[in-house]
Length: 150
Image (cartoon, rainbow, N blue to C red; front, side):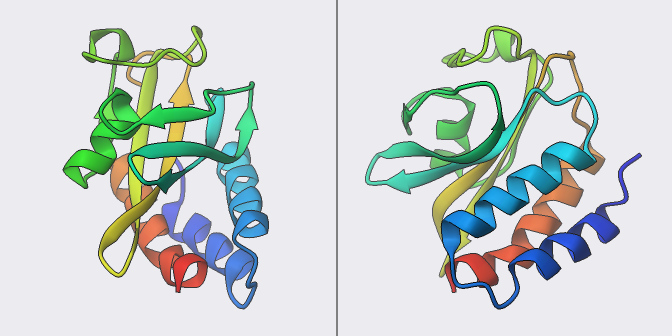
């Protein structure tokens, strides 16, 4: 089981006082990818208008643009809440950037209460992500948002 308190502390120490968004997101994606088992992708999409644009990540090449009207990442933006999907093939509108992905967890990220990005995690295992993962990563995102987006 992942120690999300320790992971959050590590994440905060990586980004605190560093004024470079891309560098910070790069380090965070590497930290998360290394800390969680059974992932095939961990990274960020940044919101530009009605489109999520690929940001720093760890894993295989990914979709460059995702309309917020589609996919698990789009649902996280539209609903402004985390999306825990045990089986992506059962999710209407799922976008298969990597056909090996079977489950997904997406956490919206905010600036002044508005969604500006998402943390996206994919796994080749069905039902890889739990409520504890969702809660732990939501706390991590909440902790780093002020450092990333001021």
